[in-house]
Length: 586
Image (tube, rainbow, N blue to C red; front, side):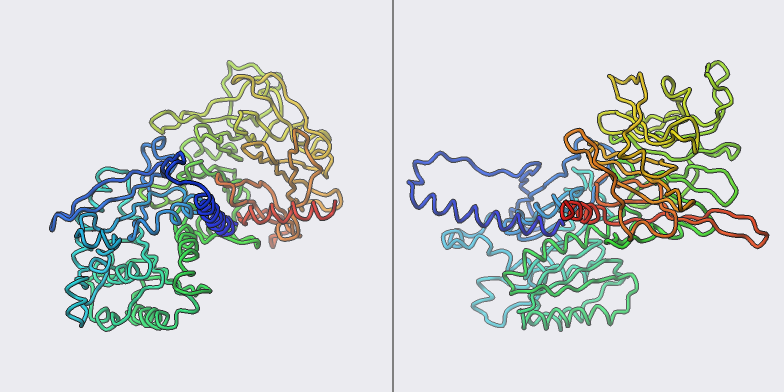
């Protein structure tokens, strides 16, 4: 989906260029009103190479939430040939790696006047990115090949130091992108100073004559790097050198090095756009946002086996903070009480699962937590005792809804009880939308005839009544429960059981069309199986659906117990399939 959007974006840009050229041809360009294109969130910063006093520029593009998230460090993508690559990489990052800082490194600005007059503003790349000198003295005198070592010093000692001093850049999550001769520079950096970057995207590296030199270069440490190498299917010469370089990496037998190769249909020129897109996609899949797990397609996969999903346990109802740096989920061993577990992303690494600070007492249940879309509140259900001074119409009811709030410093409050109109009702699995409306399971009690999905409208931070959703949702089987509402209320997910199939829950979706909810649609056979599927949630970026899949098991003594694991699936593709099926059957 993202790749398609980028290709459409590139196609649209091409059409606009053609249109603009035709328009200027038919008009006097000197008399037309003009303005200059500026990239949002992008700064152009002059920087001097300390060793030689050469002048360069950095194109620094900050992610949209940078000014808001003042305690967050961001991965940085450094790229050479900045003027050639800025548009494509900026667009690809916007769609695929939107939570990263981009730093383009320009060619030398203060080149000789003769080169400027000839329009050779990129002249310095031949000197800065190349490894070996030319055997032709005249060419060597003109282009000064073979100074990649000096340029690497400049990037390490000037560029990276500047960025990490002035921006909230994660020093452990740097990426390099280089194409053609820029790919050669990346290969040189990988072989000599691999710790300069964590990830390397090397597109069609023009390694003509460089492999013998690269084979003699050795770093004294393990590489600890991820490498993406691509080339065009019609690049006969460069593909040979790329394959030789891949063999060179394999022969190092360094288990700290991982690499992926991609052959892209096309020539050296036409392979570039897809290198940017696919390289960025590969990079996004390496990020620790989802505990470093490789994202699924349309076939559900167990999420974080051995971390979130472990044997002989019930796990599910996972919820992520909007910044993707904190999560909560249900976990319990068979026949034990539910507890809420949490993990945090700290300095680029996820902490091990541990009981939430408010959920360590196994004498009562805590479960079904949900972040608010803003991330400053976490709702959850609990059977913990309430204060004796709080009056309720049913003192025997144990399950109530609670929440914790995050202050400006990022610290959570102690649990706060949700009161009127929620205190005197059976309510479970409270889920908020962006406008503050709350959706939840309710009724006279668990399994009651009127149990289903209810909601309460936010009225300037207050709630006065609880209403039941319509029969398009609440007449779809029994045990209708565990809603997840889209932040913009464009859809709702929930699970229910068929009367004829007890203990076999399935997940359904209903769409909000101009304020009216559609009938409910099954998520299909890839999601809903003979096992029980429930407690669906969606990642804050809207990309992935998470749900619990479990079954009742039999012990040797004849008693039964539940076991479930958390699964995830590509929700964008799944939702598209469902909508296409709906439209096809109209």
